[in-house]
Amino acid sequence: MQERAARTRQAVLEAAADEFAERGYEGASLQRMVWRAATSIGALTFHFGTKTALAEEVSAGGHARFERCLAELAAAPDPLRELRTLIGALARLAHEDTFVRATRRLEADRPGEVPPLTEVWLPVLRGLLDRAHEGQRLRPGVSPEDAVALLAHIAEGAMAAHGATRDAAWDSVWNVVLHGLAAEPA
Image (tube, rainbow, N blue to C red; front, side):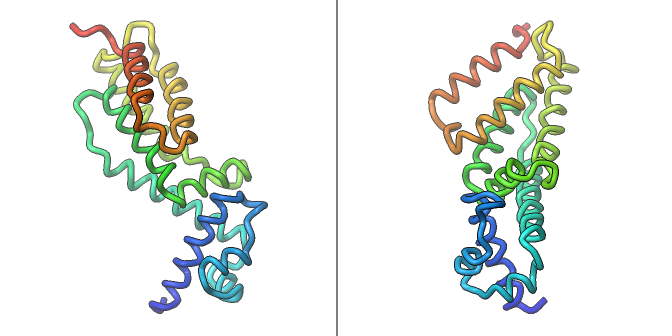
């Protein structure tokens, strides 16, 4: 693909991510997208064909960004502490990255048509809780399945809160969560 065409394609994708994040699928306008991208409707349809194809491409970008974020997380020796890092990273990305916000909005607007982002991060969360269980780091009576359910809700709430994971209240929440999950120190 020529350099100019690649720049146009990327500009349209970024404009579409902004539009989908702000207005959802139904409210998003192709005309506003081309205005934001400083291009033409012909260029948009040349690269993507339809609004649905554009939404799918934006969603794929959001998934790829989540996957990169998870791949970059450093493993901690304590899987329970790593949970905090994981959920904080997910929340930060959901707040800071337009493609991720657009993907979350598209997921909510078009259930079943956009693969859920939980397919990317939930297996990582489960893996950490399995490690904690195997290492006898979970409080007796706390099953990994129950902990996954709780932490999935916390993660979704943190992502929806758009950046509130950096304050003292967030630290207090994590202290409560970790106290409730962790086995007493030996």
